[in-house]
Image: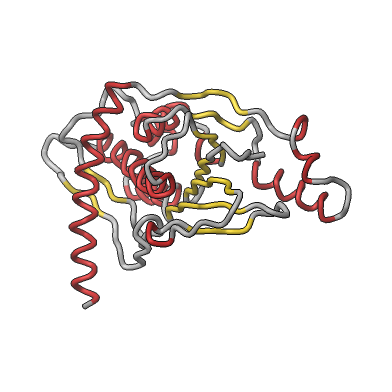
Length: 244
């Protein structure tokens, strides 16, 4: 159950960051979606990336790597400032660009690069795309932390990389299938078996701290995020030029 002050990150095929609202506020200019919630009076903002697990699986298959090998590449001590930059916009992007023509890339390749650095850059680039969606959603507001859910958030090294890139503590929701649980609760409400007020307390899964940002690594990734954004800007200019 996401409360009024909570912001949740879900990572699966795509990634979504969700912020509950008490009243509708438009943020379309930032690529942020506005929806009615299932509650009688609620609303929520959502920032979304199209390719999270999707792009990671693509990179894994291209490199003929297992999921274990991909996640092992997230070793925080192995990253270098001149590692490749991966842009995961393989199918266009939603927040903050709303650009279906945007495409992905691997750039800054050098002889110093290897298989592991390419895999690590795929994780990092996916985290950067999530950071861009989160920044658009927050509009300058910085929460105390994020609730974390989804089948793509279970690896400890990946969680730490997300925390370092996002610069926020992550609190994982203790439920293996959050979407299924939510659907079951909504079904029970529709059937008259529960009320919305019943979905808190014992029915709300606890969220425990699983990763806190390392200040040194957060600064390292902040510099690389700036490079990532410059690459995205160049790719956007190219896609818009081709469209014209």
